[in-house]
Amino acid sequence: MAIKPEDFFKNVISHCKEYGYIFQSSEIYDGLSAVYDYGQNGAELKKNIREYWWKAMVQLNDNIVGIDASIFMHPTTWKASGHVDAFNDPLIDNKDSKKRYRADVLIEEHVAKIEDKIEKEVDKAKKRFEGFDEAMFRSTNARVLEYQIKINDINNRFKTALNAGDLAEVKQLIVDLEIVCPVSGTKNWTDVRQFNLMFSTSTGAVTDESNIIYLRPETAQDIFVNYLNVQKTGRMKLPFGIAQTGKAFRNEIVARQFIFRMREFEQMEMQFFVKPGTEMQYYEEWKTKRLNWHLSLGLGKEHYKFHDHLKLAHYANAACDIEFQFPFGFKELEGIHSRTDYDLKQHEQFSGKKLQYFDVEKNESYVPYVVETSVGLDRLFLSILSSALKEETLEGGDTRTVLSLPPALAPIKVAVFPLVKKDGLPELAEKIINTLKFDFNVTYDEKDTVGKRYRRQDAIGTPYCVTVDHQSLEDNTVTIRNRDTMLQERMNITAIYTFLEERVSIKSLLKSL
Ligand code: ATP
View 1 (cartoon, rainbow, N blue to C red):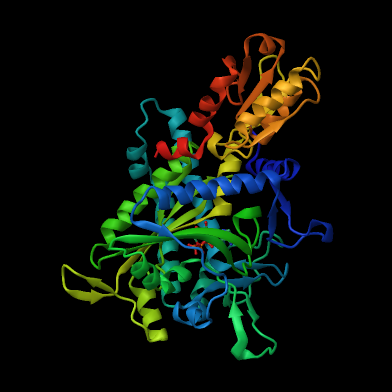
View 2 (cartoon, rainbow, N blue to C red):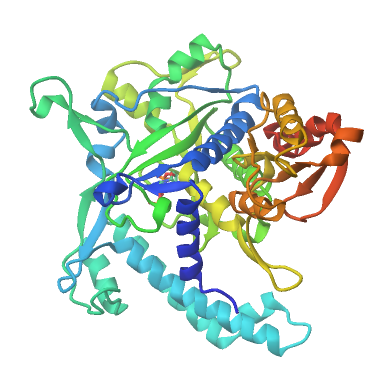
């Protein structure tokens, strides 16, 4: 029987805890809402994802360099970027349950329900008609068209209201759509209000207004304020990119869905500086490149889709998300935005310093345009982990839990087992580990039957297990067992290194790009 998505998501969360991937922050004090810690395996998986992103961006592109800037920035940065005045979410409370929601999320979820209805109609028709033409059905079926018109109407009304800053109309839309609070089930809503998402603290000993400092809500602004430092010292020519990975902080109100939406999270961003007028070409190029990067992880093409932004942020002239099919539906994984010259111009204005590029060919200076790619490391982690977790029924009716992580990202690359704890087998296993440990994360296990040891590694996601047996002492061969196929092959000990390098190194993944 197929497992319900919400039950599957619960399994993902408990698997993360049981196998040292993710723990609730400060768990012994009952946890801190929307803050999580990565455990021994989670830290490795996260590091590997970050490394793959960094190398694909910085190492493989000779016109992209990386920086590592501070979380704290001069407070005027956030005035200039628009975050002090406009980094808001529209909030609405249900008076009965006292629960707070993001108005845009309530509306998006309502639209998603109508989209589900369309998919159900399509599925029904697929089963009914042989030689089913989906495009034709979508463009002619009366019920599908009716749903589609409804969705367009909602989206248009919502977009117009947000663009006009008309919060009363946003509330009216929620009322007209008869959206109910999932907790109380009532439509007893407050007005919609704007709420700033930045965390603030203060520097120095005196706490007053002038010492207020923010925890950065995005890593992008560090890149903009360092644009000229990097361009000059790196003698960078347009087009060029600056990449950065690091923590960002947002006082998210609707902080559910595990590590999908956290108050402290990590971003991996790249700002690509281009000549004005060429930004659309690079926007399209980066859309393709970033989607290909995601596809290289092998989680399945059908799990990704582009979603164009209905309401463009104040700085953008084009923007879309790469959405991923999480256990709770298609949601934003990465944003790709054409940010124009907005940020650099704002920083010029607020700092009084020129942030321009001298174009030798044109013999003139101008402010470059920017195309940004911005992905959440934690969301990527969740996309990978939730697609990897499988419950399989084996021949003979046995079941196994396996985490089919992309091998190059797995926390442990290979486990080495002696068949028994004697006859020199542990010593030979240790020798093998010593030839591998400088390049790969290796683990040793001698407890329980080999079958049980395989199961433990399957659940952690270790792609290969090497077993040393008595034959190994005679002919220097071992068995190597594949996590996904469960097949074993015999191989000479000297061949293990190359075998692994071709399959589990970040290099092997980079080569597939
Ligand atoms: P959302 O609409 O889901 O709030 P956003 O559009 O505000 O996201 P961006 O500002 O474009 O997100 O940030 C870029 C990326 O950072 C997102 O695509 C996402 O992967 C990640 N991200 C943003 N907010 C969070 C968060 N609270 N927790 C985890 N990751 C986040």
